[in-house]
Image: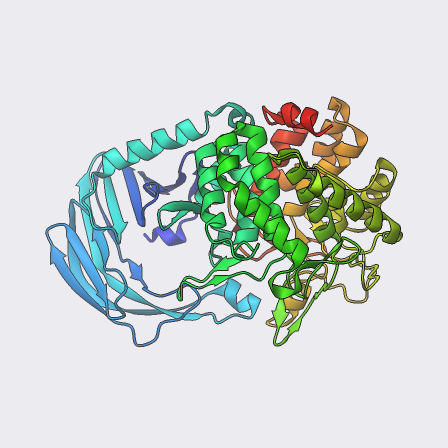
Length: 557
């Protein structure tokens, strides 16, 4: 029998688990990774009243996830119960440790095709090294482990299993976390990685790296509502150490090690995330430690820095094309350039100025003065819900929701109501907000095709992370009474949470098609998708507010 052809049962609690039944034999397989290591361990438990044998052939590759195999070969060495596969491209040696097994070095290559990559218009053909056959024979009931790793240490798989199980149980038992969906809390844990000696956040699986904007947007949902404060602080420190003329990194390039700064909003998100961290921790020592970096961001934005980022004569923030989160580039052209004064950038700028005024240790009031002038000039120009002010772009996009949702807002409740109503009527779907309304001639409802998907990415495609800010804006304007919170959950979040298995089981995709049936697309598990659902569930729906929020709000009045 081939287990891959046996549908079996899949379930997920602390670990992913497959249960197969072959005649009167039951095979239970759990998969887990020791925390923070490039190691996967499989735990098999077999229930049988007779003799059996189980064999498996590992399919092995050694490449960057964007590459395909080119002139790759492996040498094999056997050492006790361990088989080592050494690739000829100088990447890490792959070790498979399978106690109780016999090994037959019958190798070859398997040609495969990745159907999702084919649908995306990406390269989809690959060759995998069939690295021999492992066979385990037994009788009656038994349990055994198989370790796959590139680490250089010994493993006691029973100990590793119990250790990781305890770690996950503790993770799920942290205060507010016990009220949140188990699968999403476990998914949130998967994005926390290490860059050098400090923690970082992977933007999405399987092909994204750790990016500044994504890390900062994800931070409250992944680390603050889950009470992982030290890791949140590490990530903020890891980003701000690279501050350069007021800019925070947009991306770290894996292969070259280069740091890319092409973002206007990441530094503004950084200031906001320091404030969110303080609302949860009141860690004023941390604030004093990084205050100069925060001041550098605002001061450089006022006088001007790279990428045309500069406070204009009207106190609004100007910037070059392709620096907002809608940053896809096709050839030499940005699909949604949004140059000059994008609406959410003005919202983030005002919000950052008010935060700086609230937190400033000298009490000079210079940030409040600039904030007041920013608000005055913004409101004098913002008469038609523009997406970009300088070009008077009236495209209906979700970016205006940040005018309402951020802690410090330039618009009153009357304007907030209009924005929420417009977004709900024209952009809302069961899985998030569309990036462009369907009546716009540029709208693309399907994220398919080599070039079309890039055009559709921010021109109609649905992004789940935006629903968190929509829910916050809705309740901020309407009021946080229980009836409205229940309404918001039932109408804006319930469908998405009921379909966590549509892409990656237990997680949330990066994007969905703008047209029905809203097919999940992009990364199968996206950090800010998971993060914003967790954050809005905790802070907005359950109304479990940050412990020190009132303290800071009282000081802001």
